[in-house]
Length: 462
Image (cartoon, rainbow, N blue to C red; front, side, top):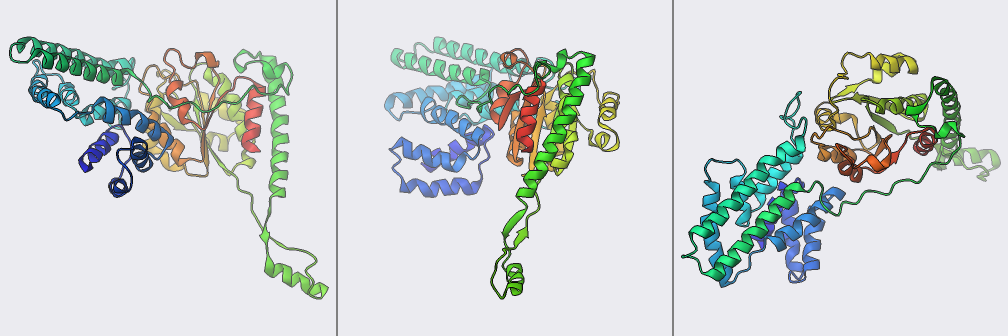
């Protein structure tokens, strides 16, 4: 049993789950206290020790049936005979000519050792910091297809090698054993192909989205930002100015109402000396307002910018309601533009950002590369007091989405909010990576007009 749990832990690590040696030892200590023949108890012990986040729980629920059911080895005479032929076949697949990079991992997967194949799939999902950081690097253009195609070819070559092995040894292998071996190989290779082609672990259900925003600003509030005329933009800025003043006043009253802390006994007793020791008036400790920190990622490519600039305008008009606001704009790499808002008035700051030479507006949008570079350079700007707001349509030109890094940002922050100005019916089409990003966010909103923006900002501030 210890060997099986250690193999499962190694396979779980290969899928990106963070499992320490102490957690494995704790799991081994708990196993004798449960009935291992009761699968519900056994699975609960493993899940409680190995799966710590929501994404890891989904990965665990995906890996558990694969490891303990699909790759299970039955210890009977027939399976022992099949195992002997599998060892010979494993060597033939590994030594296929011409050599193919994925063949060794596939050979081990077919023989019941999934760690190498799972590691290879995890490397596809996360390119790391050493790859794909430059223009044209790994993951550019049709990245998902380019990375999976060689492995798909290896699976097909392994299938051909397996069938050739059965044909060449049809005299030496009993027909019943040959039939079982063929079914076994087809199941394993079909499983390997299914794992390669699926994007996200099944069971990772997106969080509930908010309903439609109330129409508090008339017809102007329902017009999409991208469709505003110059005159409507002027009117919209006046409405936004009034909205920000109102929200600022409301947040000030909220902080004033909550400024009282717990009763201060010493001050109360000192004040009671004026009334012959009778505490007629309670004194409270001062409780300074807790203002959250905001980190904004803003996609400045294409039509997204026409909506995102209004979001940035409101956030910076409400800076008094937050402890700190940091802004990063990106096309394919994060650029810290906070100093523009500190040095210039909001409209001039937006104009300076559009003229900033550090932003490569001609580059293809790449959310994955942006996340990799942010992790390397700016990850220490996020802590448990930080609300992270991502503004963008999630379209990454088929590049690696690096959802693991977004999950890391979500774990380090107070909450992660995604604002998407694109219509929801297009979120999961084409090169959109919203299917990968949406389940990792605390909240995802469609914001394309003033009514939706006002409802979102009101909930953040209040």
